[in-house]
Amino acid sequence: MRKIRWSYLPWQSELRKQMIREQTKLCVLCCGARSGKDVFARQFVAEMALRIADERAREGIVLNPMVNIWVVAPRRAMYSDLRHGFYQLLPSDYQRYDSKLDILHWPGDIQIKFKSTAEPENLVAEGVDFLIYTECTRDQRGYVAWHESLTPRLKSPGRYGLAILTGTPRNYIEDRDNWVKKLFFDIREGRVQGVALNLPTSCNPLMAGAIKDLQNIMPRRMFLSEIMAQWLDDEDSRPFPLSQITQAVGAPHGKRASRHVIAIDPARYHDATAIVVGYKDDSGKIVLCDCEEIVGADLATQMSRITKLAKTYSADIIIDRTGIGTFMYDELQRLFRGRRVDGISFTHDTKMSMTNLLASRFESAAISLDLPPEKATALIESLANFGMEIDDRGKVRVGGEKDDLACAAMLACVRLSSEVERNVARGGISLRDFFRF
Image (cartoon, rainbow, N blue to C red):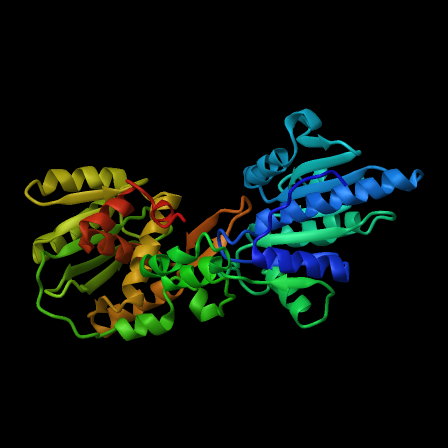
């Protein structure tokens, strides 16, 4: 075997010894961010591939003289760090990269092929000795790719057939679709042979000191999933758990210490235009005191109702200015020149940021829903049904079937939060960048 100095963290070293001793062929690592799961997968596969290549070279005639490694991800961008890491393991003179085919050639007849499940036509052909399936928990196509394409390749005659699946627990996928979670617990409960670990970020000594700070700034749901690597039940996996919402209904609050704010999530045809009114009390708690949905009304009727509410509450305004909201934003600025009218463009990042901001308010009991019962019911339903899912590109999407009032509540939270939080949600930075670790 070629002389390379392998460097493993303590948990990686123990896992390496176990996998070699037991000749493990399936390893599922659902660990915290920056725990070193992908680094372990890369180093262990490289070490074993070089060893197998040497053995096959000594044996001479074998069924599959070439060692075949696949690195698979939901999208090409998700395996770029692994590709770079493999390239750094050997001097550049000893390897060749084919950018057209996305293949790294190593000495000893070793090929490392990088593939995406978004291109299923590439997940066929030859058998596979070693597979690294990174960010598998983000892959909505993963069940089909794993069972119909990858598993048969690993079981090809003469192949070593080792698979290492890595990712962070994704708790916002419905259990019936969460194939990685099912595989993880099948291994844990002995129904499938292999190793399944969910180690927290703190298992990496370099990150241990940052855990407390991360806990202070991250929503509980995100911290338990991304840092502590825990699988959560359906209640805890939602951005706004029903238990926290009901706790906020009628929660005590102080005197109003800010101007009222009207938050508007506009719609034109299918959805309802949602309006939420709130203010901040003398302790800094956000109080949502009114809400309304305008269904099936033309633009003139909607503007008339919004104008009436703004005059009733003498309120500042914040509005989603995407789509029809662009016109409404411009019109509201013209009508209310003496008041503050803010507009936020709803993008993936800003919506995610606002979701985490409101979730933090619920978790810290820093919000009160002080509305009439019939209006409180509509807002509670919208918040409770607000969820997260992963799209076909592996991106996390937030929202729900009737998320209009929830989106308006998030806008109100942004406008009534501190200046730093407001700048974050306006798009100066996203909470994903703010929480980057």
